[in-house]
Length: 299
Image (cartoon, rainbow, N blue to C red):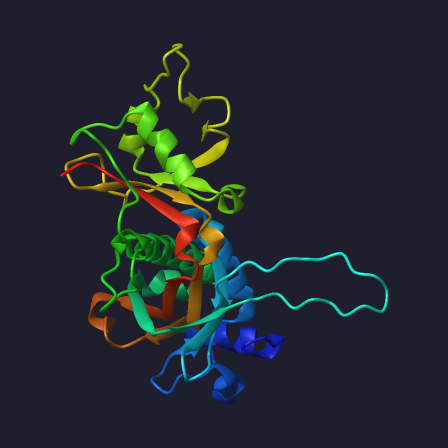
């Protein structure tokens, strides 16, 4: 979809108000006057998204356009065996779990002065790519952490906590150790800690009984595992789920429809502006619940 050079040229001609044969855009038309962004734009957009969104960096992105909206994921880890030539290869006792995938719509509207859009030196593609990436990236990250599962994807923080602190206003060194070892070894290899920046500031002060800091300042790791921060993680307060630790590759970000853009030429004409509305459809599923562990502050 939207892969040809002809489509790419036609798309941006339309967005900038130049003459164009609309038949060149048929492959990306969505029936409401919007067009799927060209592949070249989407590649740059996805790269920019990853800078704004921890899930785009660490989760597994799956494209799923099928109408039924279901995915099957292996919920067990298979094994490999040594066999002699000619011997049958043993089957792994893999089990599959089926997930129902919804199509949540995330949208945004950008307005620009008409003189900018029509200026031959203004890079409209670069501007929209950067602006929409910031908007969509932040909204995605917030929802994939805290989403309600009704109008947004179900956030990972809706799961039950695995470790609860003894105090309702702080975290101890030993509780971070408990969180670390609550995650099975097979999921620790690629694990990361996720927390608010304020929580990371607290953890930087923790020391063991020998006076050694928990936090390795040389590479921003805890027990050798990277720490990533998000403004959408709860800070340390009574009842808050303040730290996630695990392998985010087991979280699947499922793209149901890639970013699609509509030019609004007349709606803001009296203000001398042109609007560009964009939307995408996606969902998210943690296909292996054991791959993420949560630390909650005592209520």
